[in-house]
Image (tube, rainbow, N blue to C red):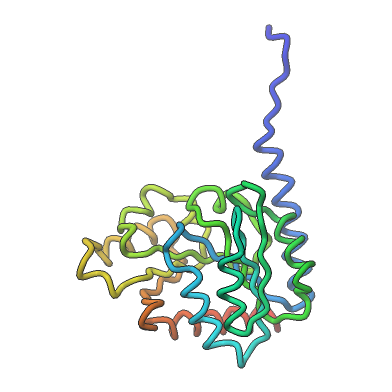
Length: 222
C-alpha cells in the first residue's frame, strides 16, 4: 500500500474552470453581449481576418476586441486602427486564457457596453482548446499553408469550435491542400461545425463568415 496521496489536479482545474465559464456565459447572455473566442496557430491570419470582419460589422454593432498574447501589444495597436476599442491581455507566459482571465479582460474593456466582443486567443492549437473561456461561440482559423491534416493532429480544437475558417485560399496554387479532405476530417470530428473558405487578404468568402456572425449575434442578443 502506498504511503502518499495522488491528487488529480488537472481534472480539478478543468472542473473549476468549467463552472466559472458557465457562470460567465450566463452573465454575458443576461447583458446581451456576444463573446467570440477566436483561436488559431500563429501566423494563420487572425488579426487580418478580424480587421476585415470589423470593417463589415462596425456600423451594425458596437465592437470591442481583447488581444491575448504572451507579450507585446502589436495586435491591439493594429486592431485599434479599425476604430474598434481594443485592449491587450498579457498572459505572463501562459499559452491560453481560462474563464477567470477572460472575465478580467471583459471587466477591463467594460464589455456590457458592447454588442459584440472578440477574444483573439493566444496563437496555439493545443492549450486554448482545453479551457472554456465562457464565450458564446468558439471559432478557429486554419490557413492553407498549415496543411489539410491539422484536424488529424489537433482533434480537440476542431471538436470544440462552432465555426472553422479556412484562410489564405489565395495561396492554394502554391500549397498542396485538399478542400474535400479537410471538410471531411473536420465533420468527422464535429458534424455541426460551419466551415467557410476565405481569403482575409482579398476578402473572398469573408461576407459569408460575417453573415454567420450576424445570425449568431442577433440570436444571442434577443
